[in-house]
Every structure is written in C-alpha cells, then in structure tokens.
Length: 295
Ligand code: HSE
Image 1 (cartoon, rainbow, N blue to C red):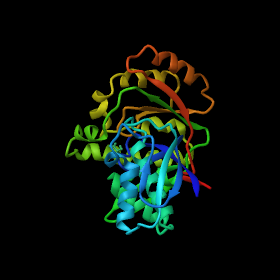
Image 2 (tube, rainbow, N blue to C red; image 1 turned 60 degrees about the horizontal axis):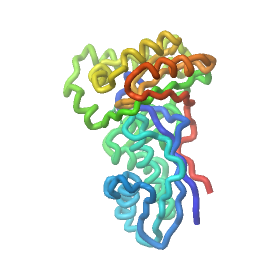
Image 3 (cartoon, rainbow, N blue to C red; image 1 turned 135 degrees about the horizontal axis):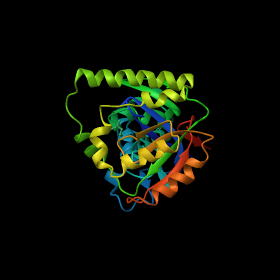
C-alpha cells in the first residue's frame, strides 16, 4: 500500500504571541509512504544521519512506545519546499509527518488530540506543531500533559509575504539570546498586544495589526541574528504592509499584506536583490487544512 502525506510550513509567534500563536502557510513538504514488511526507511536524506532525522526518530519513538513491530514504512520525499532552520516550522512539519505516518502504520490508535500532545512534547512548544496538524491560525496553551488550542479566524483579504534569506538561524541559539526574566511592563506590553492581535484578526481590522504585532519578549533580542531585518521591515512598511514580524525564531521575515497589494512582491523583490543574504520573497496564503493524507 502506498499513500502520500502533505504537511504545511508554519510561522510562529506572529509578533507578541511567543510560543503561543502560529499559522499554517501554503508551502508544503510532501512524502510518499510505502508499507514494507518491517523497519523504518527514510530515503533521500543522506546528508543527515538517521538518528538526527526527525521523521525517522519520531516514527521510531512511537513504534517503540506502542510496541509496534508488525509493519514497517518507507518514507520517500516527494516535494521538500519548506527550507530548514529559517523559522518556517520545518522541524514541526517533520514531527507532524512522523506522527501521522507511525499512526497509520500502527492501525490509527492515536486521535488528533493525542497527536497534538505528542507533537508538542517532542517539539517543546506548540506554536508550530499545532497549526501544522490542524491548519489555520491557532492559539495554543501547553499545560501539564495537555494542549488546549483554539483556531482564530483571519481576514480573507490578508496574505503573507515571506522574505527568506539563504542564511539559517538555529532555534536553540535564538532562544539562548532571550533573557530569563522580563519586567512587568514588558509582560503587559505583550499580553495586551497578543489579545489585540487575536481580536483584530477575528474582526478583520487590518489597520490595527501594526499596533497588535508589537513585541518586547523576543524580536529585539533576535534582530542581531538577522542582518538586514530593519531595512527590510522599513521597505515593507513603505510598500503598505500592515505589519512586519520575525517568522518564528528567524531567519525568515514576514509582512502581512492585503491581497490586492499586487505591487508588493515585485517591488520587494527588486529591493531584496540590493541586499546581502540571498533574500527571496514568497507570497503565501493561510493553509486551513493542516496535515493531509491522500490515498
Ligand atoms: N516560538 C518559538 C521561538 C518558535 O520563537 O523560539 C521557533 O520554533
């Protein structure tokens, strides 16, 4: 038996919602899965040792946990469009795919809620893995062994410009540059903006997004890891972007733009060519399906 699995890229934080908000995007990794007699094979990933391959390790952990030995899987990458270590949820996509592949091979003992919980435990935070599994924009809370999440409506006339450089930022490094403690003032700053962001999205109030995406928890500390950020944000604003944020922990930058802002892509592209860093632009939509399995 052969089937395909498609998992979306995700952008986390969206400014103030550090480790809490995430959004699935129309950029995908797609794999072909073949059922084999036993074991786990992941093809086409020769540069990375298998024990560091998140699809492999996720399937392996679940097979072990569920004492599954009967039927194995061969994972063949079909389209790999989510770039690695760019703040677009490539790790979460591999974890989500690994869980879904293992679940199917084991006869589907896991419900969606179990998959969300396992994915969050493996990733360490829910903001990428939950939208990768369920699609859309999602607010998630990880409490004890549970993940509680809720989907957020986003305006139909909003789309997302992703400025992706050729350099990577490791999430581990980008978390190390953050302080251990924050002032009450900074906490209130982020709480109020996260609340405003969720409400403004739901109400389609694009003019409020600039205020709602303000952040004092992570972005200013990470700016030094992303040369060109300030210039690109400034250019995006001059091209009528509604808000600019770091995508996840970077290195990708994201501008929220109106769908009819058709000149943004071309103008930004011209600008990016003048910058160091091999920047490219992709205009993406919100993916509202999350992980998909095709027969
Ligand atoms: N919320 C995470 C962070 C996303 O910003 O560190 C990166 O995976």
